Structure formats: C-alpha cells, structure tokens
Length: 113
Image (cartoon, rainbow, N blue to C red; front, top):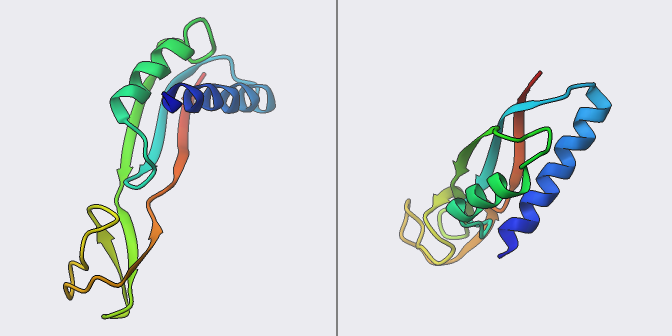
C-alpha cells in the first residue's frame, strides 16, 4: 500500500514546516490529489490517521480536494477534463489525447497553531 509511504512523506513535510515556521500543532491539512495520481483516497485517510498518531498532526482533519485529470486533444486542439486516461475527448470525441495534468499530490494549505 503506497498510501502509507505517501502519508509518511506528508508527515515529514509537515514536521519540516513546523520547525521552519514555529508551529506546534496541525489542525487541518488540505491536499489536492489529481484524478490520475493513482491514490486510493480511503486508504490515504486510513494511513494518515495511523501515521500521524503521536505527532504534531495527531487528530488533524484531512480534507481531500480532487482535481480532475486533463489532456490535450490533438483533434480539436484543446485541453479538456478527462474522467480517465483512456476516455475520448469530451469536446470532439477524438481519441488522440495526451494526458497533461491530474497526477499531482500537493499540500494546498495547513491550519496550524
């Protein structure tokens, strides 16, 4: 389950931010997760609760902002939102698409004290 490794990296980033910005506790974490990031959201939530126990983020709320996948359509020359990597272009129905967004996993912001 790579979600646990993601949670460990997330905790490390929060701890580094805490040291750099002199905060002791994280109340809320907002993550942006792309539709093509390959992250199972419920597994991430479970891992977050486990990994953050006893840390500065113990009991913090995890808010997930899902970002749709995007692709460039060679047929209509447009960037479009995609439900999955193999979906046709929702604008023209073309199948010549190059995914160019939706793989991100980003800390949007933290509520801290």
